[in-house]
Image (cartoon, rainbow, N blue to C red; front, side, top):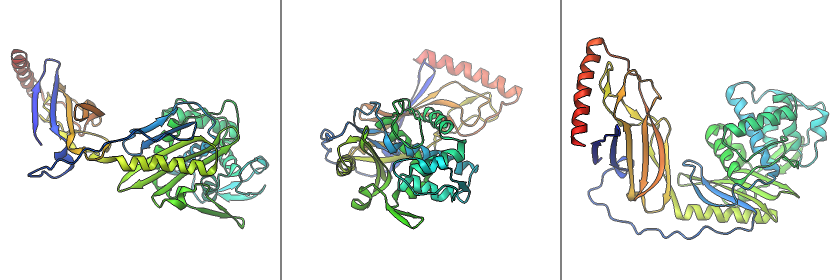
Amino acid sequence: MNVMMSIRRTAKLCLFAAMTAVVAPAMAQVIPQPQTIIPAPPQLAASSWILMDANSGRILAEHNADERLPPASLTKLMTAYLVERELDRGTINLTDMVNISENAWRTGGSKMFIEVGDRVSVDNLLHGIIIVSGNDASVAMAEHLAGGEAPFADLMNQHATRLGMNDTHFMNATGLPHENHYSTAHDMARLSRHIINDYPEHYAIYSQRNFSFAGIDQPNRNRLLWRDPTVDGLKTGWTTEAGYCLVSSAQRDGMRLISVVMGTSSDEARAQESQKLLSYGFRFYETMKLYERGAVLATPRVWGGDINELRVGVDEEVFMTLPRNRNEELRARLNLDADIQAPVAVGDDVGTLEVYLGEEMVGERQLVALENIEEGGLFKRLFDQVQRFFSNLISNFTS
């Protein structure tokens, strides 16, 4: 990796490195690829839409993505997410049996067809929520997890805030119409990204085409699961107020995209418009993993510690989504604190990683300490004070 180093008076250490040396083996000769010409994103027959990369979070296309709209059964993505979260925490198990109340049984709209007094497993209810959009299953799980749909909606809103869904407010677990029940395409994409990345062990349910319960077989309403083998989720929605909505996700050649389309005119339209977005993203963009979690990116000097160098890197995988055939233009800059003093704990912020595509900064991540460094002994700390004094003196003199 070619690195240019300079110590600035702003107490920042800046490294400029060729990113391609990090993400691919060095090549004796790089043959430039013809640059992809990217057209404007497709315009859809929908009220609102967004296309997001699931790994990097980059938005590739959007229209009215932050407009608050009724989400219909897209709401159940949050209902399912909270069930998955409790399964992951171990507070519930897939084999737990849930008592079905009359309230759950009476809930209108799409149904899993559970009966009053039945005891149904969490596993079956989760499938019923995701695959056949069962309102009855959603209410049953809300009652099981929170004691009722109102307190469950409060949980949904708390987690919406935690996930950065700032334009979302839930009043129920189903998506049945309410004037104060709303979300946005952007927020639904954020939530879907968490579903995919936070609890991947449950994600396979979203790709299932059919679900059978109590002798009744029902299909998943996501038409793309039949039309495109790369599509494996997520959820449909419809009410008169919301129109036809679809959150879909597909993975091709290691790149995963999330499409959210809200307010189309028909079941067929939401599938077609979603396919347009996905095709556009896969055709003109690619996603690269630049760094693994825990990769050591630098070893800056530490003053007053029991050792002199600190291993610094990122505490999560770093992905970047960029136009195709432009990866040779990627560069990274590490802005590291030049005056790092012991003690240092794992996870302490020590600077930033900036990623550039040509002259444009396309990503920024926090740099953190990857190890603990304790204070050195008295003599070591005194010795480092002297060294630091002369280092700063030289820096000020040469800057």
